[in-house]
Amino acid sequence: MEERIGAVDIMYYVATPEFIARWNAAKGGELVCRMERALGGSLPSFPSLEAMVAAMDEAGVERVCITQCKMWSYRHHWMYMDTALEEVAQYTTRYPDRFVGLAGYNPFRIPESLREIERAVRDFGFRGVYVHVYGFDIPLHDRRMYPLYAKCVELDVPVSMQVGHVLEGMPSEHGRPIYLDRILCDFPTLKVIGAHTGWPWVEELISVCYKWDTVWLGVDAWMPKYLKPELVQFMNSRLGQDRCLWGTNGLPWKESLAQLRALGLRPEAYRRLVRDNAVELFRLDVAAAAGRGADR
Image (cartoon, rainbow, N blue to C red):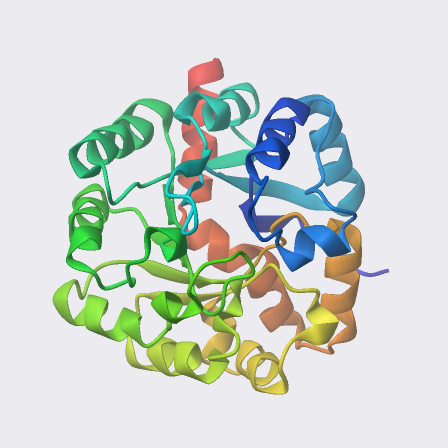
């Protein structure tokens, strides 16, 4: 009988009906993400947190990272996704053993963002930060991003950032994975997740992972059957097995995991991809123990 591994999804969003309705309304006049169009025009939502946990249980997903995503409209110059800290904290407070909070960052409001990140980590137990730079029209290594990187080093939490192309109406060039190399030259202890595989610059992201021990590759937002052979080879390699993290960004959990198993990864590489690397990077074993202690 195949071992059932409690997977950790490193990339999800606030999935309440209220949030998704607000997001759908905000996209008027924007280029709707092709992934959303493929899913029927909207990201999936769950009627309650309990319903989401039940779906996770059915799919064999133990934990999900919820991002406090902040997206600026490149076309219309307004924050058309502005997730509140409390919208993420409702997940981590109700189900601390099932959800992991990742704080957001707005490079146009740096002092306010840094204060909120510190509050998210110290008061709410968030385990990292997620950033989406494209709409702000700045590259990953822009000087307005450096206060964030310094704060993540100070707090000893990883920063996850989309790299590669972007499906919304924003310049993809700002997410070139090779920009991570410049960032790590200035912050060599910063822990970075290059999310969304880095496509079409997958090899760039692999090269940065090869050079820097503190860079991880997010295998998320893609159904695994479409992954480039070079990425599958890296996931299954001795180096890559320790540096890849699985996620969905709203794609169906059961189908994603089934397609991953069909890739024929070595058992150790598969387990580290879907669970162990995320547990170690986000220190989820420590977080779970703290949460259980608080309940007693």
